[in-house]
Image 1: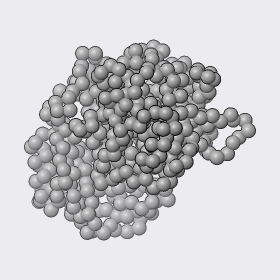
Image 2: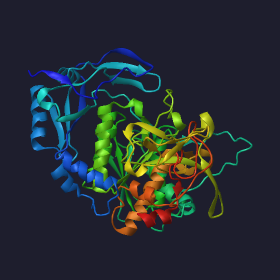
Image 3: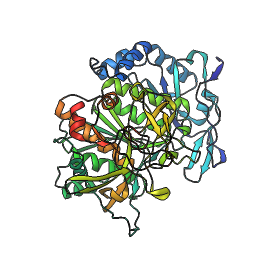
Image 4: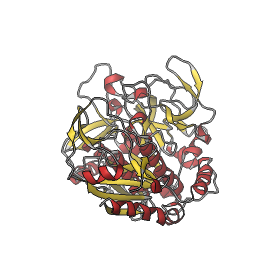
Length: 519
């Protein structure tokens, strides 16, 4: 047998607060997601640098061209299949465009194939999961070929970024709520129903009930959009009936997008909540040749430090493919302020911190009639949640953020040295939140996970009107002055709002007409 060496970036440590229960059942069947290198990487990098610079002469690649020129090489796939056969593993599916091979086998077979030990752990919030420590090992002939091996462990990777309005009513706070069409109107979205567009929505658990959606859209006098559940890695639309759980997230996302672009198709990708499931869900949406979403909304994430560098790189590479295809990806920046709930100081949320994502932060909104009277950083205190934002430790400063600075809550200003989060914002406080219907109950929800679908719906309207995708929008938004409502009051913990971009609300909340003008 060929000697094996650690796969760079695959090291795992024991999750803080986890307790080892014992070995996994060696006969248990599992699936593992293997991601391969990109063909013509240098050529792809030069294409990406033009896209990142906002070069207007770069046309989006077709999904077919991306697969042919920048997918996995047939030789590389053959090597992985030979490795699988040598270890008694079955190939469940292979996807040249997504550069992925999914393998199936027993715990014992995978332990031998990748020289890892898989054990059961218990965690007070994550429950019981299959984990590993140390690195994944691959043979010499797969070094440089395989970029990531995901799914050996299935610890929950992300959390949904939504907050249900607490049932208390502080006397001082005037609580209001808005329907998605009301917010679209306050934010001056251009007219349209998104006809002909597909919006991809990523979900890592829970589900929706058609009855909820039908009665919700009817209550708004809005046509029901076409909603298509897409199963990834055996996960499916499985509502639990608990609005406080993932069902709240799933339903919120669909109701916000659907109410604003009822003419669009909503493809909802259900995947297991693990790094493998999350990446495979986004990859499935990006490379979906049946539904072909032009915009993808992600309301899930976790602190950067919780990701292995192999999973972060693999995910970022999928997001690069989205940018090359002209698919806009909107992601929630998190609901726990500048710490992202990490318990270890300031952190930003991933995938929002990827430079290939439009990271969506949160505001608290007051309106009178048809206009916004006051909008500040969403910060309802430690129990109530706050807009995620800050400076990435994983990603370098993108060209379009050069020259910006970060304002700290103490008033100090520092040049932005790495990727700053978020890019934009929108109403997210549950106290000024979104009226939705979940599990047959009318409720008010906030969180940055409401802002990602809000921006996704805006971009779907713009795409429908233009007859082509807006694509990777970040360079255009940063170059254009005044297309967002600048938020200059409030903080998210360590960072304060300021004139221009800030690490709480980014460039600000949308003026839909102006955003449409620059896209």
